Image (cartoon, rainbow, N blue to C red; front, side):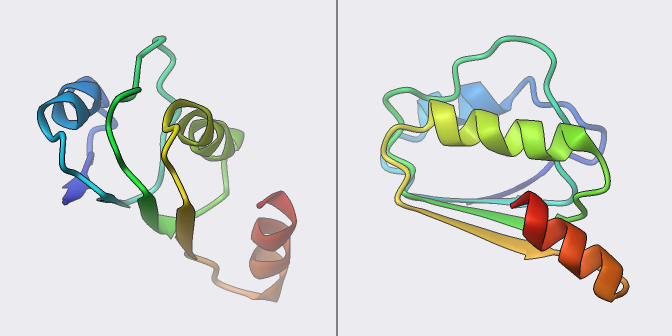
Length: 98
């Protein structure tokens, strides 16, 4: 399933994960935004592949949200990050952060 949160509204993601017991691949489109509320991201959800499209790495919040997913999705086996970098300096910074 592919989700896009243009207004940084993560409210529905835990519900989505809970209602999709057979979900093995989750694709998040757009830059990540740190969800400041403590949420359970589908502790029983069998997501094995997390793909993040348009990761900018320009804000520490993006990296923090990625860490939350790594901690909260216990069956995760593979994380794919498609970074958005405009130059070599951005590419180097994103690679170092990840």
